Image (cartoon, rainbow, N blue to C red; front, side, top):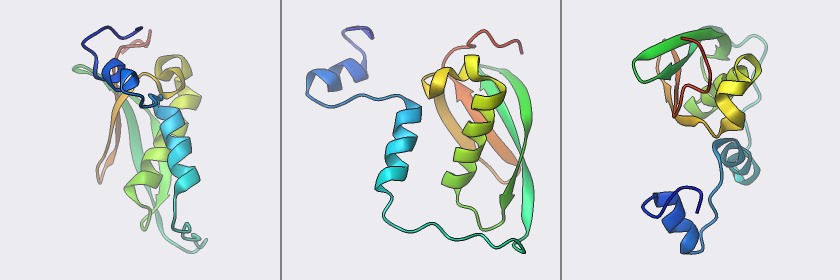
Length: 120
């Protein structure tokens, strides 16, 4: 009801599916992950990735994360969202305001649904 009659989430909820926010999705994914995580060796080379928040055509740099060169996109995304929750928790709103997370070679871009009161 909170999303309106034409919203996809409301449609799925009426059909009996459970609708959760982004942070709950990340937690559920970690809980049911079948394969064991690779133990990262201290000698494994790492590289910095820039993390930024984007809303429409505006962007804000949050900082950098250090990731292993063998890290998966999922691990990079998880670290970037954790940084964003620490640095801009009111804009992220516990993951509910995240529309999409793009992982590239140079950085991670977190796209927001609303500006969340963040000054760009």
